[in-house]
Length: 208
Image (cartoon, rainbow, N blue to C red; front, side, top):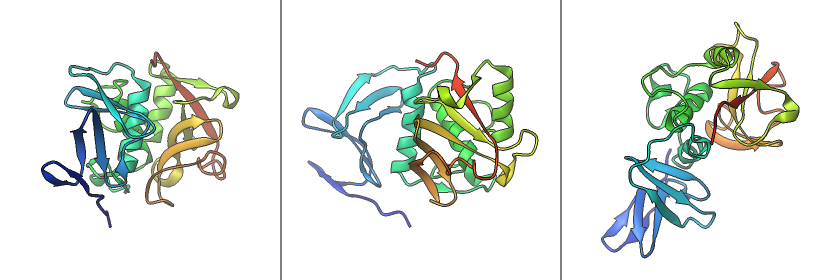
């Protein structure tokens, strides 16, 4: 069950969303206020620092391969308690995701792929890596913030046969996963699907 966190403002109580209080903006989520990531709402770009204070960066922002904004989508979905679901319809709805639909929606939010294409799966991520225009395969030794991992055997990774998410650092990932019933930040080793499957790593081409 989702539990909303209430925050008072001059007009009473609000449940969620971006509000300006004093000199700063605050993004109220189910888990409290956003901290340490960027949020894009109706072409308004906000940046929230590690204390939760937000700044309006642009009122007419069109993302083009914006890595921080893509990762920001993952944090935002985590803070709004997106629930894990592999149901074909639910995985694409607000409030729900599975591992690959979360990655695809984050990439769309950051302007890496068109919002008009369908959310894919680990198989289509492998294909993007083969083409090399959006994802470029790298070695495990090269991984850094914003890279993508895809676990599974190409051609056999659909459904529960694979897993994917974003690298935050060499030891940490953010991913939508069944054990946590949603999006969480966990250790990398042992949580990528690497106990059962081989893992490939990819860098987003042209990320800023």
